[in-house]
Image (cartoon, rainbow, N blue to C red; front, top):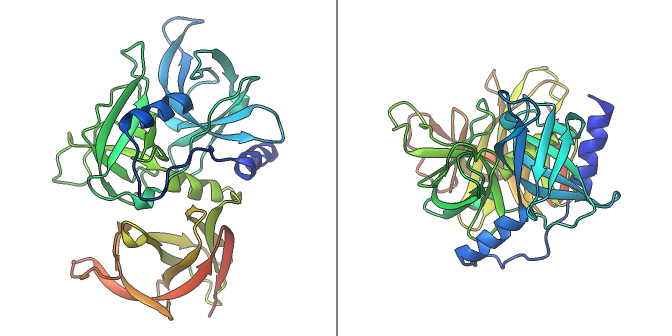
Length: 358
């Protein structure tokens, strides 16, 4: 991997700091306060106009996610990758209305998700978005999106209803599903907030069906903040305040393994997601969540039917990629479902590594 990229991302992840204002768990704040937070952390992104040389047009939005403490006023902006990868120059309009030039050297794309980071150097001081936990969202929760429609000269603040988390490993991370938000073209990259004003995702798809037979016009999609944290870990970089689980395939048969993991949440019980693959003599790291401490569970198997599980509760899994709430109490009667034994591990912020042998 490019040495500069590793240094660049490491600086972001190690030094990313949370904003001081953090609502109590289980409380909500007025939508007007969420809008005030959104206004202070959202930027407008412009790229060159293909029809008018030297001019820039509105392309999307981004959110101020972190700051490099070793280097004064170097901010990092998270946005949708598809709005910036076709350009070598950008303009960033910060919340105070100041427009600045950004070059391609200040850009890094994620490996597995439709996300990218831009680096902004400035003498100004800006607020930083606070991470939420996208696994804590439950059906009908209100989510908020703040971004810049291409057809308007002002930003748009809109609300919608969370529908589901669906693990779409092959679809650039678009597993955060919601509806009814009044999003328009040009709002890709806009931050998604929960009802505490915490960042839970990045908006990317205005309309899209979830599977065959479901109406295409109903749903919108984003990439969850937890997907971002897992994607960053795939670069070999971890954020100190985030809890990661690293499973390593050390089995003698040299077969590829697939695994699922589960964690406890306040609103959704035991939340399980999978499947993740581990090639022989390699490891796979997944993000459990910001500052998560306690028990997690995993189940793994290979193509020969060998499995790894034991002292944890049994939970329900799907045979295809999935996200499941209350998996330990789910009746597990679906066609593609099965109940599996698990191994229990204690984890805390940082990386807990565990070898699968045999």
